[in-house]
Amino acid sequence: MASTIKIAIIDDRLCDLELITHAVQRINGCSIILKHTRPMQFFEHLMESTQIPDVLITDCQMPEIDGMALISLT
Image (tube, rainbow, N blue to C red):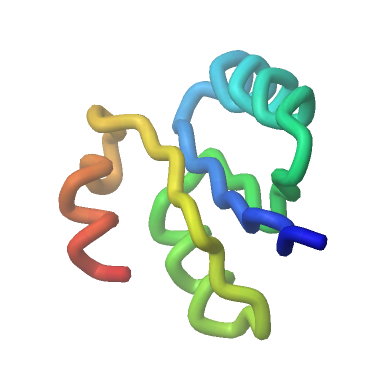
């Protein structure tokens, strides 16, 4: 049996976060382990989590930190 792909989603707009969540939930073999609208809160949660995502889906333009900078922190 194939392992589940763990996904984290970060988007500062709640409506976009929910749309992406809905789309990902329809993909077999994927599990959403983290969802956040605030990038720095996601980063703090990631540091405390025992599960590390395999895939990070992020908005590129967010007020606190852009998606590319967030990826470089992880």
